[in-house]
Image 1 (cartoon, rainbow, N blue to C red):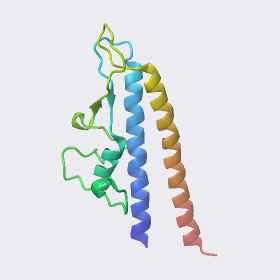
Image 2 (cartoon, helix red, strand yellow; image 1 turned 135 degrees about the vertical axis):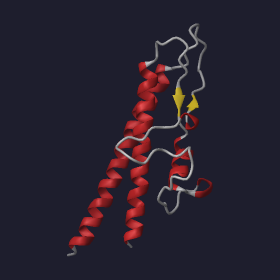
Image 3 (tube, rainbow, N blue to C red; image 1 turned 180 degrees about the vertical axis):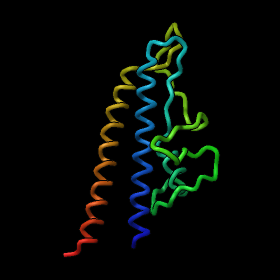
Image 4 (cartoon, one colour; image 1 turned 60 degrees about the vertical axis):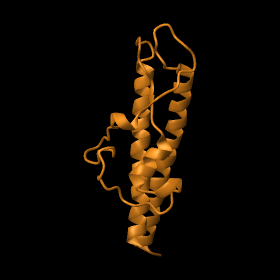
Length: 140
């Protein structure tokens, strides 16, 4: 039972860490909106989360703890995970610019808001899981 609870918390923690990293990446894109030649970056959230949790073939089932067995994994130590360059994608430009900058501010703002909502949801899931564990520990 404890393994299932810790696995559920670990999955939400990985999702929260990845959401935080995605928010940092979107903020970086926004900050470089006027930088000539800057190529907007993005991550494939679902694919990266499956890699982190070890879920096979796209179905997020029973999460497993991440094993740092591959150079493409996120760093697990410390408070901030840093995406490796090989995990980042280039965002497809929506229109051509003379300065070769591919940041689309409308897309970035929408992505930022969407990711912020999903970050909040991950926090709420973790909070709910912790409350459930606390109630189970307290008993009736």
